Image (cartoon, rainbow, N blue to C red; front, side):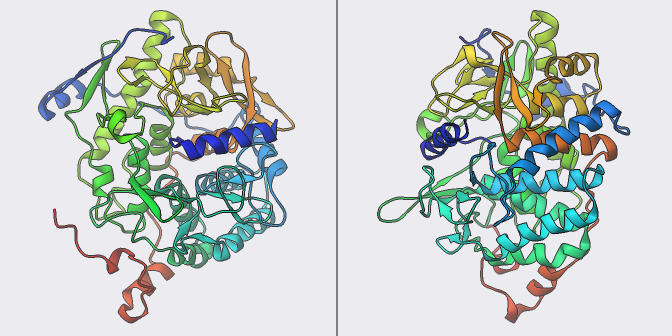
Length: 473
């Protein structure tokens, strides 16, 4: 997921050391009415997923991705490293591991015994892990001993990230839906956490960082990842409207394609707001761009279609770039094995199209990547001649004994050889989607979480949904 803080940058620098020109013109920002947006978008969707059994080649792809998780599982905690051979992970990475684990089981890479043993180890950790301020998952954990650490890997309470936590919440819900025998234990993980500081009554999400005297709390999330983050909370009954209510009048034109854009000014918010691909891929594979609409009473009606239209535009503008300029394009956030250690290959950011930038806003145009995880997600969600050709660009980017690389550089074709849980989890999740379609089906029945919260005098007073006042708006 996007790492958009200086603390996170220090984490990436440590992580890599221990483990191992803007390319076109600027876009034009414009404001349009809701009606105009609907007219432009109506009838434009040509979404058709690549659904069917895995071929022998695709099964081999899955086995390669799973090899990463086999190699990087720590036996004492059951946790998986965020990057090959680096013993730190976030809540987002734990969610990645759960997605990879379910995919490995459903694709026949492991049997029920191994699935149960691996999942039970993670549940054991989650049931007793230390919490930042005694409330929420810490930003970073040591995967060998399970202790809280900071961005430098030193023992510390580093704070929390609502976006990272949401990824874990999504997959706690999905695992419980598919395997109700674990429902109670997954619910008990959520019941441990205190939600008073991470989401307000109207659904705004917050991150927190520990400084010398107190906690510094700021709003977290930008368009795409913010909607995904709201999903994790809404699936558990929280009102997440503020993080999922898309503004239809904030738009940008990139190569004559119209996309929604987050106009919050990075100079004022200290948070970059690039248009990236991966969040829309996760929303498509897991929720069909509906974000659990049938499941959550708090879903803002109609936004599902908007997300699907935005995802289609995000895909189409990259396909068009290849058609017009013959530049293979699969844009996302990615790690790299040298400073600045993480980059955001955007469709649009900071006033320009196709800009590659670090979280401090500095540009790195020669380091744009054809992202392996973005390519896999686009390939499985859009069955088109472009994605067929795109897969030929990245289908050899792996070490069969270690997993899939981050991608191939646009400028030179060279590999970015760092190997991460983000990318290998996306490969497995994409191949799982291919075999079954939308992963979350809203079929889970009420369990321990619901029954406990129905008992007024047994509620834990952790600002869980029924313990909250209604949003005044």
